[in-house]
Image (cartoon, rainbow, N blue to C red; front, side, top):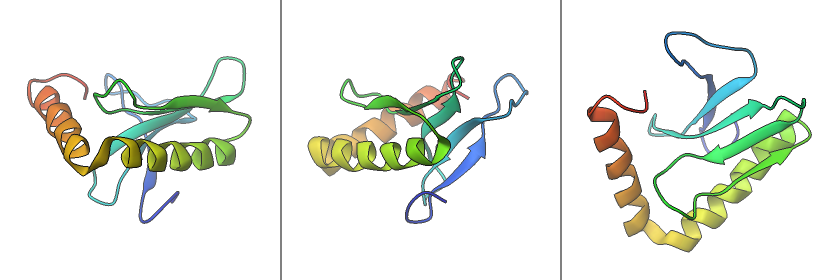
Amino acid sequence: MIQNGWRLRLCVIGGQTRPDDYAVIDEQDRPIGRICRGHGGGWLWAVNLPNPRAPSGDARSLEEAKAAFRDGWDQFTALIGPERLAKAFAEKEAVRARGYGR
């Protein structure tokens, strides 16, 4: 777990998983981001919501990536506020319902 009931789940893309590639799942069982090992051996993290201010970055370790994700999420949600956050979740769900972003 990385915060308040959040957890990491292996990403499934095209029915396949790969080691060190995780979806960040919130306490309501919604995917909110991704943390994965980059090609250079470091870690990449990103909040995956449709908003141009959604943060992303890199880190030296999985633990650093989880901490950076947590900080980025907190700053992002404080910046956009609850109304725009709800709108971003609704937009993401609409895209998923159309069959994209699974």
